[in-house]
Length: 332
Length: 179
Image (tube, rainbow over all chains, first blue to last red; front, side):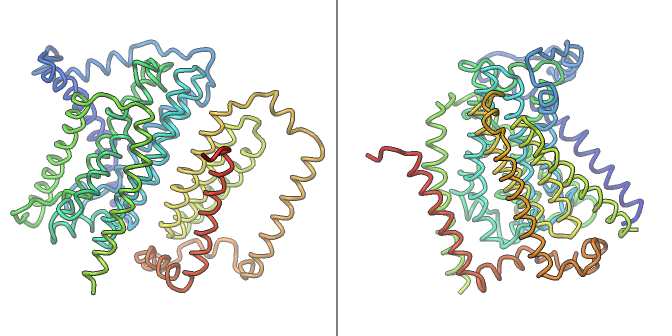
């Protein structure tokens, strides 16, 4: 690889991981507060900047200037490591997502498996954060988080298998190209998409599945003992996980950067348009996250486990069987 | 250029695997052990990447670091091991048995590697700058899957059955009363 190529790659990584993702996460926090306010007939933060758009910057400044309290009863090394362990996988997982035509930071054949392996690391941050805090609410939150994320990882992974069966690809870019040629996969695999969506809400610990940090029972769950920027890292990680989950939903089931009924022009304009299409679709699914959060109440923990193991897991296995049968029949 | 860079990374990952493995078995804190062990798995995944075996690298992280070690952590957190409980694991017999077992395992490993003829190859010759492996890696998942489900389908099914019976057995043991 040429030196210039390496520089370009580094620039791309910085732009995506240090600029695009955190900015989107900040905007998402703002959107969440505004949308929830409108849903409850309030206005939400509208004072800082136009329509309150600069509110995230004010929040960030407040986070930075807060006193960074490290309680005396914690396991210090792991306590400090946990927020970073939670954020880094969230950023890494985005690397293989094709965010525009022929564009992805990491172009590997095992793209979808890479996403699963990186996001399976994400559970460490939450679990260890809860354990190292050495407090009962944190520990309960951490235990809940690890149990929940392991359980739903299965349903999440299995709901993607039909995609691999139909397209015959594990490379995310080529899965999108297949959809551009043959139509979006949600048309073929609607039930698999439903399972993927529900599981991704559980994986990101969002309502209706936010049991690891259920306020009414656990104060704030795994991050009860965290303050200042350490808490902000957990917070940021949750939002970046949401972005990655939405981007994956778009890539796997909604055609990625593909625009229906319209042929993208060749060259730079086409790439820009494809990136915009991808962002618009991802934006819709991010809105869906907020919409669901402020509409549905929280599941009870046993209901959550029952849904994961007794409904979603057998259902996704059934869908795999049906899809495999269908693919085998059509292949003949 | 690429060859030198690969060699440097080979030794970095090798040091990471050996170092984190050693630290993992000498910690008294069970959570620390689990964390160092998962770092060791990440190092192994790095070596697989240097061999252009991306599928194996990803599966290594997914299965070992992402699933098995997380389950270990989960159990460690639930049991909440105290320093007094560790007293029971001290004593010469356990240490001797542990040493014998590890030596036996090392012997089996060396014997297998020797039988496969891997000692005749210079230590890092297989890893660095292996031209052509990148092209071969393109269809790597298929290369792995096709023999697994055609030539070796019987051993594969036997292993699956073994695992299934282990799962059923552990459920039977934990569920004392079956009503």
